[in-house]
Amino acid sequence: AQKVTQAQTEISVVEKEDVTLDCVYETRDTTYYLFWYKQPPSGELVFLIRRNSFDEQNEISGRYSWNFQKSTSSFNFTITASQVVDSAVYFCALKGYSSASKIIFGSGTRLSIRP
Amino acid sequence: GAGVSQSPSNKVTEKGKDVELRCDPISGHTALYWYRQRLGQGLEFLIYFQGNSAPDKSGLPSDRFSAERTGESVSTLTIQRTQQEDSAVYLCASSSDPVGDEQFFGPGTRLTVL
Image 1 (cartoon, rainbow over the protein chains, first blue to last red):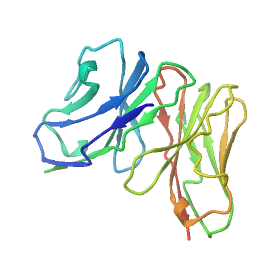
Image 2 (image 1 turned 30 degrees about the vertical axis):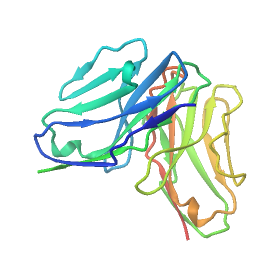
Image 3 (image 1 turned 180 degrees about the horizontal axis):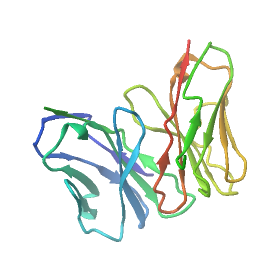
């Protein structure tokens, strides 16, 4: 069975602080993809990143970085120097490596950045 | 526009009525998903279409829910005899890569059942 756990329901930090959103997953697949999506207050989900299970290199994109560790089945997301515009719900997701496999979302973490 | 579109954006209906929600995926996208998102909650998978394969209906919560897709184009989600607990935002997403599956989401249809 596949499962994605985002234990942090809500996080609130002051602007310019760094913040890490946790994601832990379970899968029996040896090959899979992991994703992060952002849902701002406007409601429309936006794709942020995709990682395949072959590639454990960490990735940095501007203020965003992702730490993928197969040993702990985690795919954590860090925002550096947070800004008010980062306020949103963030979803982590998992998909097996086949067209028949559906994507499984975590329950989301609501991030609030206070000015 | 080039994105996923959904209609209507808002739907208010009375309990017991049937509703149809429409999704227009991005042209050429073979994969299409429907999700339900209740207020303040996560995404609940409903159904997945991939090309001409039989859809994965494992997320449909009851036999009042059904969905169709014609080829690789428009999909409609039908809810019969709506109940108040069906009130939610219904999201559609499409993808050109059924394996790697970067999904593009529509703006959703907010359904309110009175």
